Every structure is written in C-alpha cells, then in structure tokens.
Image 1: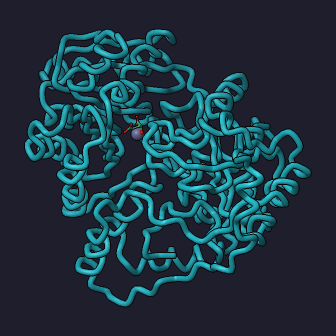
Image 2: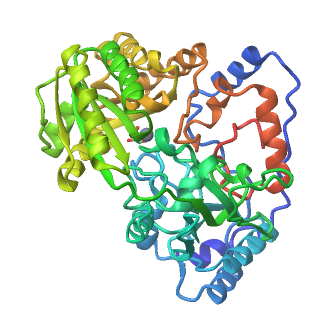
Length: 514
Ligand SMILES: O=C(O)CC[C@@H](O)C(=O)O
Ligand SMILES: [Zn+2]
C-alpha cells in the first residue's frame, strides 16, 4: 500500500486539545510515587495521542513550501527515526528540512492548524530519546539551517542559525581567535540549537558556566507559527522576564529554536592536559580540591572515569592507557593566556599531588595531537560502552563527595545481573554518568535499577538528569527532582505556549500532564 492510500483512510482533522490534568495534592511522595509505579515501565511510550495524520494535502503544502526538502522516502527517513543509541525508534513518514525561520514558522502554523504533531530534531545525538519521534510525528530537522549570521570580534558574540554543527562553529571561531563556551564528545554531529534546547553541559562547564549564562539571545518559533525574536546580543538586559530561559532546556516542547546568540571566550594561548591515576575516589576528590586551589583561574576541566571504563576503551576501541593501571583516571585541562605561567602552576600542582601520593602516576600533554589523544580517552567512553550490548544510562547530579558511592552501591545491589556498572563524568560539576550494561535489553535488570537509582538520588537531594534532559525515557521520573507544584506550573506554561501539545509530545513532561 502506498503512502497516499494509507493517509486517505485517516481522519482529516482531530478536535482533540490537550488539557491540564489538575494535581490537587501537595503530598509529593504518595501521589507522585504512585504515578510513577502505576506504569510497569514509566520510560516506555504512552499510547498515541489523537493528533491528525498527515494527508495528501499536507504533503502538497509541504512540497510547495520546501521543494526537494520534504522527505518521504522510508530509506532516507530511517536514520532520523532512530536515536543515536538505537534504543528508541519512531515511525515518522515525513521529514522536513527548512532553511529559514520563515519556513519553520509556516510549517508550525500549518501543523498547529491541522493538529499535526512535530518532533524538532538537531544532530540527533541525545541520550534520552528526546530527538526522535515516538509515533508518526513530523520530523522538523534543523540540518539546513547552518549559517553563521554575525560574529563580533570585540564582544565575542556569535549569532548563528540553530542547525550549525558545534564543531563547525568551534573551527569558525578558532580561526578568529575565539572558542565556543561548550565542548561535547558529540561535537562532530550535534547542533547548537539542540545543545541549547537540551541545555547541554559538556566538558567546559566548570570554566565557562552553563548555556543559561552564555546564551544571550534566542529566536524561537512558537507552536502556532509566531516568531519570537529575542535574539539580543547584549551582556546585560534586565527588561522584564528572561523568556529565553524557558526555551533553554525545554527540549523543543515549548518552541523551536531557530537562531542563537552566544558569548564566546577568547581562544586560550596555552592549553595543557594532565592525565592522572588515583587509587581511590577519596584521593581523587582531594586531588580536585588541591587542583582548584593551585590552578585557580586556569583550570578549564576536571573529568574522571573508572578502571572499568578504561578496560572497555582498550577492549573495543583499542586505545592505549598512557599510564600505569589505576582504579580511577582524571583528565585535567588548563587554559590560560601565558604558557610559562600556566606550565609553572601545573608543574607545582603535579609535584604536590605526586609527593603527597594523592596521584599514583600521570602524564602531561602540551602539544595538540597528544592533548587530543588524552581527551579521546574520556570522550570516547560512551562509544566504547555501546559495544557491550544494551546500556542503561543515568546522568545524575549529586554532592560531589557522593558521586562514586552510587556506582559502588549499585554494583553491590545488582551483583552479577549486570555485565558492567561503570562511573565517569564531570567531577567539577558534581555530575556522574552511571552506565550499566547487559548483553541485551533486560527488563529484570531494569526493574532492579529503577526506581532504586532515582530513590538513591532523591535521598541525597540530587538531580535525576544533570545535563541530558528528560526526553522520553526519564519524563515520568521528574518528581524525584521537582515538586508537584513545579511540574504543574510547567504544565501550565506548556498549555499556554502550545495548547494543542503538538511540539515534541511524550517528552519532558510526565504522562499525567497533558
Ligand atoms: O554516555 C553518557 O552517559 C554520557 C555522555 C556525555 O554526557 C559525556 O559526558 O561523555
Ligand atoms: Zn556528560
């Protein structure tokens, strides 16, 4: 059966409007936990909401608006329907590739009128199932919105379209003696619009802060097609509510980000990377304390991974451990303006941690290729894990001294149910990536991990999603990190900005808010 025949059988218009389910109770624990446990798998997809189906007329509209950029070939749609981890797969039959904000506006105006659901998609590198459709949502890709609009080399403010690939922006800026304030392992594919929509953290947050501070302005298309031009290029602007913050981290559920202006730091003149081994997490923490004190303003990253991660890097990616085997590895980066000064500071610090036996072994790189090689050990852990089978991923914020306790506790809790329980992440940000693997998807293992991991996190007042967002997989666990009143308010904002709920449905907000 051809695509047109299939569409012809479906209702033309749905009158379904999303409404807010009221939450009356302030007894967070009883009500919210009940909601979470009611479903046997709260990370799974809920039933399809009654959105319209794409008709022949809709396709004709899209083809006139986006000639050659309205994709319906199932083979071409395949990679956009599945997430990077290959754990979530949608069934969209239409992929739209606008080039301009005006085109995005016309697409959304049409979809809103027709009650057609839309899944905005950047580089599709997300890890919580937020960037792929769940059912047949139209995929709105920013891949052709890839132009730099302006760059001011006095203020360091870059304004660009949402579909610019992070690494391309970094290269563009480096030629002008600046850098992007964020850096991620996925930089070769991820889009800046997706980074902002998910409030991606990454490897430099310790130094340059989160996107909530460095993003100065946004242009956003709202669900009904209105264009909200808040593309300010000012460091300071206290005129009323800071609306852009609503779109940062809301994972495309409140609007589609079409352009970003962002404050970029000067390219550091000297960069050094130290790769160190520690024999306990306590020593790693003491090394962190010492590092903050002795490196001060030149410290730009403090990352860690454990010995299990190193084994996987060696086994699957054939990477070589440059130092003697240790239970924990640290990547420290310094970035400053005076090579002699920075090296002097770094060497004093290294001398201190070596003589006090906080660190067992280490190596330092000042040259670009060696720096890259050391960084790739940390950056490629995610990739190494994919070779182990199915990975259950947890992205947790905790008081920094607690982050590895969770890994150890989880190892004891799961015993030999799990193939690997590994920990790595951003020590400087108190952000642990707890990853648990099994040869294939294993519901019994999942039941042993969740909600145990969320209970543990909530007990220590942590966040169940430090930087990856909630997407499809974590949405129903939001109550472990936010009170009911806050979630209900999020629902009100969603209902106000997107009354039909067409933007990235089934994501971010829990199933009782719709
Ligand atoms: O794969 C993960 O769990 C973490 C990915 C990313 O946030 C990282 O810090 O490497
Ligand atoms: Zn991370």
